[in-house]
Each structure stands twice: as C-alpha cells, then as structure tokens.
Length: 377
Image (cartoon, rainbow, N blue to C red):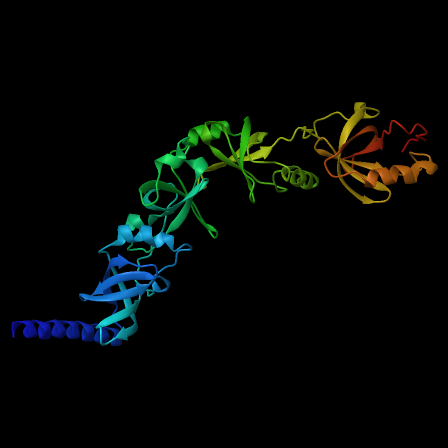
C-alpha cells in the first residue's frame, strides 16, 4: 500500500511539474533549467525537477566545434538558463527545450580591460577563449582568439590546457572576431614616452602580413604599416604595394615612427625602403644634378613614348624618342623597357628638369648600345 502510494505521489508531482511547464510556455514565460549532464547530441537538464533535454542546435549560441560544449559543460553545471518548449513526451513526463531565446544582458567590452575566460581549444599557433565565463554566462558566449606570439612564452604547449581559466586583455573587436592579448595593453607605454618616439627610425620585425602589415618594434610594442597616399606620394604607393607583397613574417624592416594610436594601442610607421631616399624639392639645388648618373626604379610603363620611373622620392620620366636616341634603336629600347617590372632598378643619366611638374627627364644608359643621339631638350 505504501509502495503504491509513493508511486501515485511520484506521478502526481511529475504531472504537476509537467503541467506547470506547459502552462508557463503557453503564457510566454521562459522555462528555467539547469544543466546536469551531457551527451553527444546535447545537454540533459532539469526544469521544475523534471529531466528534460536541450539539443546543442537549440542552445542560445552555437560553437563551430561540438567539442567546445564538453568544456562549456564543466563550467556551466547548475547555472540557470532559460528556454521554451520544443516538443514533449507525456508518457515519460519530459520535454525537449529550445534555449535559443532572448535571455542575456548586453555587455560592452573595453579595450585594455582584464577579462577572465576559459580555454575551449588549443592549437600550435593560437587558443580559442570564451570570456562569457567572466560574466557567469549572464551575457552569453563571447569567444575570441589569443595568438601564440602574444604569450611571449617558450613553453606555450605545456602551460595552458583546454578547460583551464585564463586572464586576458581585449585588443580588438572586429567583424571577423574578437582578439585578446595575454599581457596588459593598457599600460603598454606612457603618453609622454610615445610622443618622444615619434620621428625615430627603428628596426621592426614583421609579425603579420594578412591584410594590413603589422610589425613589432623593440620592447614588444606593436605597429601598423599602412600604405596610402597620406603617408606616401601617389606615385610611390604603387611601388610600396609591390614591395610589401614580398615581405614575410620574421623579416626586419627599417621604419620611421610617424604617429601613435593610443585607442588602438599601436604605433603607425612608415617603411623606409632602401631605395626610398628623401629628396626635398623645395630646398634642394637641382641645377648641378644635370648630367649625373643615377639609379632609378621602375614604377610603371604606360605609353610607347614614355617610361615612368621614380628617382628617390621624386618622379622621373624616360622618353623613348628620336630626340634622345637614334631612330633605328627606338624599337629595341622600347621592347627592353616594357620587359621591366615595377621595382627593378636601371641606370640613367639626368638630362633636364621639368620644374613645373617637378619631374626629372632621364636617359636610359644601356651598356651594350653605344649609338646614342643626344640632343638638348
């Protein structure tokens, strides 16, 4: 008799809980549940003491790898989340719940601020971190990448493990993801010291070539190397683009610090390519340059009669005309000219200067062609 009574009582409370969930769901009231177990398809949860199930596909967010849920389970057990009815089984007094409903507080992340996260994944070059851990998951999942180079640790492989908590600092919140650093970036350099470094020439090591080039200065400070006509003259931009395409991670570049972006926590630098010498048109004396031999660098070849070049940081043109060369050699010279690629250097002689257009007129010196016809132009 007591056994039957207990069975009836068991059915009674399950029925009551089952009906409570359905009533709340019909009224649009979110169903609270706690995660108590995990399978390869989703989470076993308790809602009003009933054993229910939430598939991974109906969690409030999605991870790109289902293995992340195993890590998440270890830090989320007994935490209250909310859902709505997905389906029900009246015989077993259980529900499948959909937790993909609005239930989180909005959070605004700040650069340079410390956050606690948990490691979801670890590769040779990076780790994936979820700093939803910082907020007790009240703001949902906030995943990001911490790159190996940001650790500055030789024993990277052995120190941090999947599932372990880790303290990081936000560096960027971009469309393609969130990025962290292991070290405090808010104290990276004082405002006074950063101003003193502007104008300094330094050696920088390339650490990223994906998109905008990122380099690392001495003492581990980061800098970006933008290529635009604000930093370089229009004719020089194309040339730098061609050179930067050949730069590899680990290469060292001579750069000039031109500014500091404290909001982004990095310097802005200009690459002083070996060929890029400063030539101030306004202050320089140019008359004594006529007749001098110089190395010029191919920028582009646009027309049959002109080859466009850059001399130092100024423009130079190489006219292929019978005013400068014997007419019989024009085809030979032009065919050689169009075979030159941007960035190649050739030897030339300055014939004259176009002051109005700030341009040098240059004759190409070809050692194996002696029959030049040189005229005043």
